[in-house]
Image 1 (cartoon, helix red, strand yellow):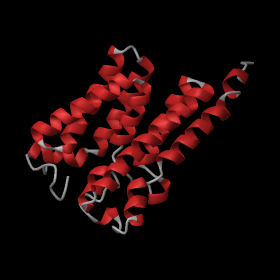
Image 2 (cartoon, one colour):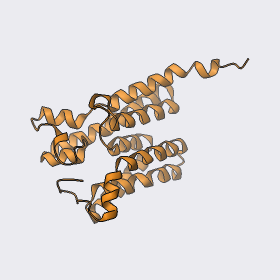
Image 3 (cartoon, helix red, strand yellow):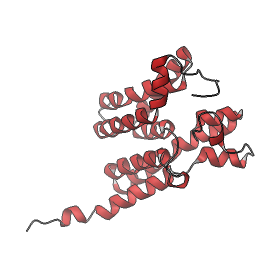
Image 4 (cartoon, one colour):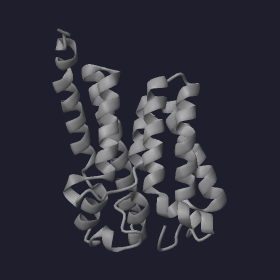
Length: 206
């Protein structure tokens, strides 16, 4: 009879990594911060998204910045936590789960953000050079085209390649999967980009 003990023994630890990552990722900071600040429900304005780009449409740059940092931190911190506890495999699982939690938060009927900030947080702690290059690419595209969604799509698409260049092969594989999900989350934006109808940064919708 096959011996499944080596497979089953670590299973609870992988489940813990996934569960903690998901719960951390599902914290809707954009919604929490805007409500605390008396700005109402961020889902009622602009794109209806809980991410920093839509929070910025409230007119409060500080709340938007706090949302961006917090959404990035929840991905980066759970990655670091499980990297220190149980190693890179668990870090990847926890980081991926945090990313999924942000996009599909259980508290908001699985309707969350688009995952870019959380993705960036994981990239920064996984390989800081890749994270900084991501930021550079995002800023360059945003400066030229004034489109947050286009900047995010280009920067995320480049990330698996950058991880591979820096010999972070496990992170390259993980980020390739997350990029597919990010592009799926941006499918409406992609449709508007193809039609030339995507609003520029500072517009009411994106």
